Image 1 (tube, rainbow, N blue to C red):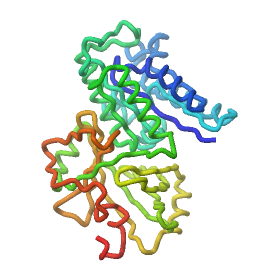
Image 2: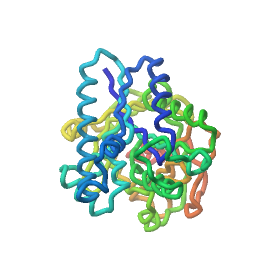
Image 3: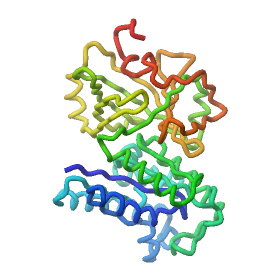
Image 4: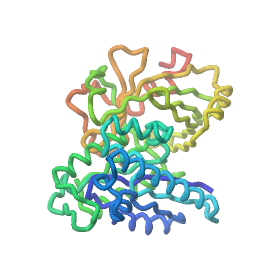
Length: 366
């Protein structure tokens, strides 16, 4: 049995309700058992529990997060009892959506109340798909009439959309789907993006890489849609043609652990499988480290820009350059890069800039 848990999020009036129907049809046909966790805020607000009816906004947010996490726990528990090989749990918004409706102090209090941290909440999902509000690029279709819990004006919807993208920025599989196409194409793109995450053995990611000047780190860290992460990557002994690594990924002392197996399908497409590890499993696998390789440490800046998630890797052994990575749906897709970032050249497919080569103890390979 394989269970995936994904989040469908987005600004108000982004098409989430319709998306659920598309997901149901598309993935049932692909042999998945599809389970849906309803949007918690709508349930509570429609029932009379809201930020303006509770004692404080923080009181309300604690209620919402508790119900969200409990629903996810119950759905996962139920899924493990089902006679199905592939189960897709779809969350209509996830626990980190709540951050968009709290100030920093309230959010810190909520994390403390539940004894958790932002990394754990964010990365507890296998993938996050953000549908951009109709108020951005399709304003004629923006309405509050089809959801009694929706109250934002179009201007407020655009602001909330930006904040939500910032909340989820840093997740390793965040995809932003905008309104640069008609609504049916938007839904088809969503289905394609979900398929790319759960549809092994199809190629999982198409990744373009660029060598850039060392960016202004102060600018990045001040950007509202940028998240700074610490990554430690260790390569394990593996058969020829296969790359196996374990990774510690997180921030502020809070980490999530992964094991990744990669096979290169062609110059740009990578067949990749990934599994979460416990801290103890991660430590045990470190005993299988390839002695020919260094442990690679880097700082990653995850930046959401113009609807595209960008990843900037800063290595301690480089002072004047860094690597920018962009995951795209197809090789011809335009890459949008902020003017503050100066691109030297594209390095997609160049061996010298692959992490596995940068970690090699054989300097002749670099």
